Length: 243
Figure 1 (cartoon, rainbow, N blue to C red):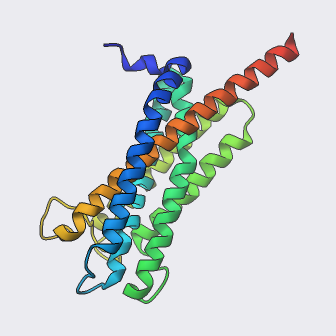
Figure 2 (cartoon, one colour; figure 1 turned 120 degrees about the vertical axis):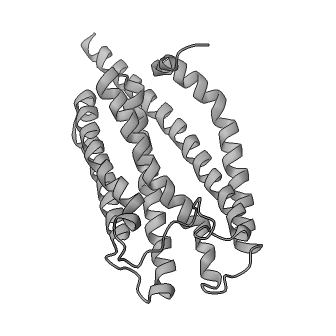
């Protein structure tokens, strides 16, 4: 069995991702279709929240992914800083737009849920505020990549930004635990059965979460392969100009 660092080789990564990508895409499509149809059409209304509770099938998976995508970017950025593997830097770059989309979905669905529950579309709640800041970090990360021509310098600076932004990713995840005040409810999924969402809602929710994870993996594989190809094309063009 080879080392995991073999996949830092762009050729090896592209070959493996090309084999895995179709299966991950099929899995993502199947789990999302099953989870969302089950959740939205075959679960009852909540006795307190009514049909609004069904927003969790989009909101919870998107919020989890928004935070964990940033942590994935942190890990790959640290790998770049320590081992200088270009694939890891490109994977972080590829993941950022996916993280933006997940954060936007979480913010919008949160607002849709919050309006009937809280009587307002937005409140400066600790978790909501830290999530908004995380969204701005995502945008800053993408803008920094685009603003710097030298790819290694861009990878270095965005890695540092990713480390700083991880503080807000942690705050987004644990804001309710840090501050008792605030409108946002506690975690929908918990080891404590008294706090956990009811079983009738949890099964399709877990399926939706699995679907979002598989969708993320598929998109990152696809986008990383694209970034590798773009890097290779630029190198060939530069070599031809020098030749």
